[in-house]
Length: 242
Image 1 (cartoon, rainbow, N blue to C red):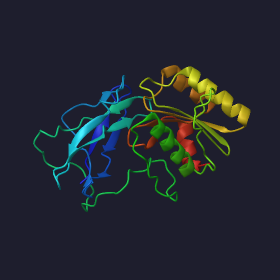
Image 2: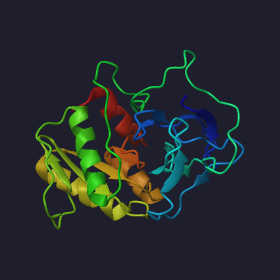
Image 3: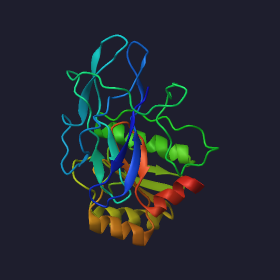
């Protein structure tokens, strides 16, 4: 069963309901990281690739493997790390899950997504290049065509271009900056295209405020490769598509 738990953002006090992502184990069994309900989620202020992975044991084959650390992006811009029960800890009673016991084979769509749109299937992010690939897939899922990424990142900082869209992907461990937002907006303006920004570490307060003023959709991505909207422009883009 997939686990779920209520989560309150300690920054804006907004309540969320987090469902653990489900992945296939090497043996084929569906597997979700076991959530540690007794621990409080903490905001991510600094990232390291080591801390972004957790060890999970498959109850079907007892295999231990590295899985992306569960995270939740709050609309206020905060990214929360969801605690996971260590593999050495005894398994507790099951929490959450679907009523009929079925395990979903994909990561749930954002709650604002158009129901007629096909299921978005993300790719796990292990490198900066993977983050760009995940963003490209998401833009195509939204309906943008001919989305391409250059072999070498241009000086403009634009990682992706397509018909009517330019996008930048920030895979660093620091929140995206005001300068990144404004540079992206200028590139979109000169190309008469929608500007979209993706970040792994969230956004600085002034960057978020400026993006809201300019109408730039902002998304945060965790290591599952599934972007989550963090402002009204992103919600609107998901609802309407390209």
